[in-house]
Image (tube, rainbow, N blue to C red; front, top):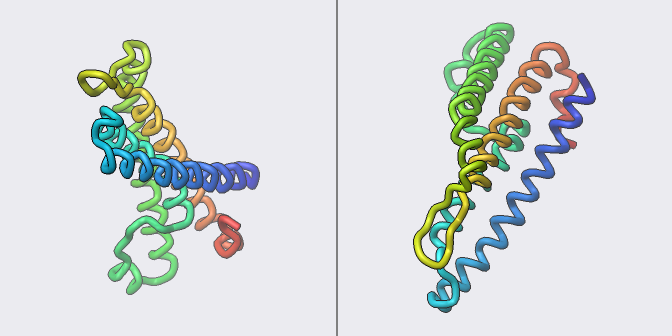
Length: 165
């Protein structure tokens, strides 16, 4: 299980860095578009697709580093055992959510790849399959990270302080 935890941590970090570099590069494309609108066509379509890719590449890291938004003002009033049960229940709900995203988006992702679907009209066509597959892959990593958190919180509380180091 330690191998899965280490794999999850490292992959989440790598994807977060890739997404950050991608977002940084995207700012230059937007800047060039602002300077000379005639230079590039389809920047709006590229940015729209890129935002989805960036969000789902960073979702796994946000989950694993416990940076996802949560309201624990009520939960903090319960006993430690009940808090842990609610926390694990929340992790399983998060995992179930991303499983449903994968389940619901799988067929469309395959179809986008096979049919080479695109957005945009005119000179630039932005293919939709990279964004769809980023959603699938990011959801899979998010699902894995929710399950890792549930395991760590229940069976390995000694790893809570050593996460993502």
